[in-house]
Image (cartoon, rainbow, N blue to C red):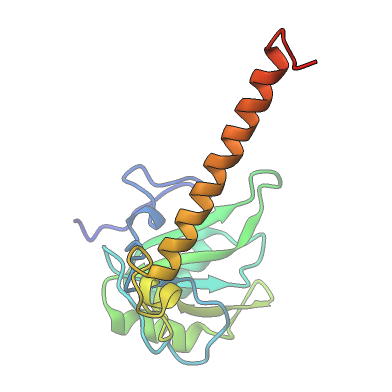
Length: 187
């Protein structure tokens, strides 16, 4: 891919695809999430997106422009992409921006130096957009504590019992309907 920055009108997706669309999807073994709270230092386990290192700036003033953010964040490295979402109803900034750098060191420098800076009077909180949750485990181990539910006799017998009960109920309802339709109702 080209190192040229993607330029788009604020609130619209870039023609070559959205930055969010190119993010690494979550898998069973790696839970990806946006950073939930501010951090004074970079996240302990940042994850690279497909194209680069994406940081999220929150607390962005509703009247901020892309140029304002690009000017601020270009001090820490070459900004490859900047995405600023607008609220469709109001036309104002939603309060966050996604900024992409080619190098992790540039992203870390932006996080360390831009966190707490004021933009249009509001303090910014900056962190990696994608982090590997240290508590993340595979879905199977979280949900079943190492057991395969398809082979667990307790789960199988409960499922069989539920299926058998559903069949018995369906048969009773069918017999009841048949009796109601029958001309000879046993009187």
